[in-house]
Image (cartoon, rainbow, N blue to C red; front, side, top):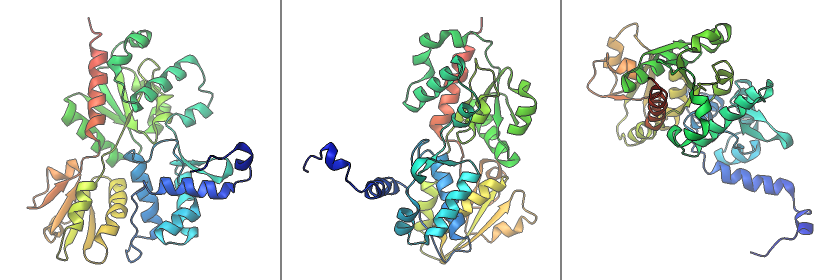
Length: 332
């Protein structure tokens, strides 16, 4: 490839460059749309992008493809993509940058916009950046010893606005780590910041910036990464015969995301039903050929073919375990 001089670069078509960059990003976004599904194309697109962000397959600070590039790839109308992006921006999953770029909101972005520029905020940002690069808390221990002098937390606090999702996060952490776990909503924490005293606070990465500015600076909040659903999608795609697929969860947000994520794999070949647990009539689940359930519903469902989906990815749970252990090592 011939070298390009600065003078030549100044004459390149900027739109073409942006389009090429957008295509590279798009190729890493595994999005599948079924126009025949009962779930609207806009909802399928928005919820699948949210899932990609929540599972960190699309990273904070990463630019999404342009509206027209994504519309061309998925063979849908560009207005549909535009509306989905607006919905994601309204729900604070993404932000708009100069040049009409749509970017995944970074963890501490909102905190930075609310005068979070003191030394402790910079340290919190450093710890989070180190984690994203694979460093453990132990590796940072000597360099941040002054931050580890506070009283160690004796329990974990889960911050999540939706009650059902909060219950799921609490259950999975309690089961995996054998630690006391409490929970509250972001609005409750904002009114009563004392809820975070004595706790190691955890929350989804999509809200971590808002949570972190409400907790004691000596014990910064930890972002939880969600698991991918590759196993569940692969199983659906391998089903040869038409089947009835049921999704069961204590969380309405879980059901909404699952419905949009599974819709392209279900298509018109299968029938998908979702149930808020506990269902009004448990007999309805018996008609299902396959049941996808969250970790709470799974333990109480009596069905021969149940596949459990655990929200928190194992590496994220291990990081919380390591952080808790590191704090507790300071006990006399």
